[in-house]
Length: 330
Ligand code: PSU
Ligand code: MN
Image: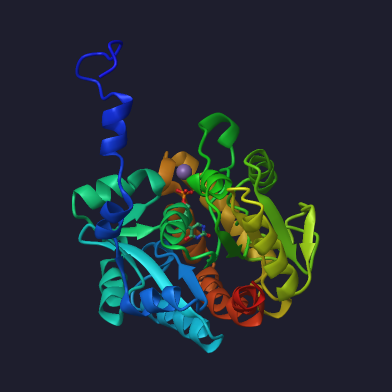
């Protein structure tokens, strides 16, 4: 033991021993037989998050949507791996019973970002993974592509509150490609893009130069990279990983024009929901679920409908082809 070690504190040696060995990690997580087989056979696997299931919409739409998204992944020749923590066990790939358990738990499942993972596992809780924790687990087992709806970002007034989603730092530190419909305008999109730049994240938009705002194609913010085909996406992801940049790639795919809900209606609902959140002092990780639920109420469910539709559509059109082709390509 080094003589300078402070009594009672771990030394570099003990730290090494305490940090998880590979086999300890494998024991902590459960990879479904289907996902495990696909990974060892080099078949394409697409990771999916679970906060959208627990907190994004009510039962039973959440279960229907989750199943529908998995079916789209399969139709496109890949194996879906929905990720969640059930009874303290991080599960990579859920079977139908597990998916239903999570859908029925709804908000009783804990919204689990990177910072919450250890606690949910240690207390044998049920955790729905956000983008950050889903990326973490996807990278752990070697899933390079992850498809989701909206990612977290810098909140409006984030320059004062410091409320910046850990999704953004995760994108800076974890080599997974996240395919997303962008960032909702409940957040501060220009600052979100600035923050991603600081984190060194490659941000590309599909068939556009503009970063999409989830419900609408346009946010008014330009991105430096434009990709026009699934092959472009695959190439970008492949090069980023081969260069060992260590960071993720964000590919934003706008909602198709014909399906985007009325931008004006949703925008005004967002403004109102934001005011209400301020008045009720709803902050921190409670803010996004509050805003999403309120916007859904204020728009008579049309934003919920749009979320469901979006999950069903954006994958089908482009994204899963890119995930699939990525594997064919490499
Ligand atoms: N944005 C959405 N829908 C969502 C989320 C964000 O439009 O469901 C979820 C995602 O799981 C995302 C998380 O990773 O919320 C971000 O939460 P926070 O801002 O607390 O980091
Ligand atoms: Mn937050």
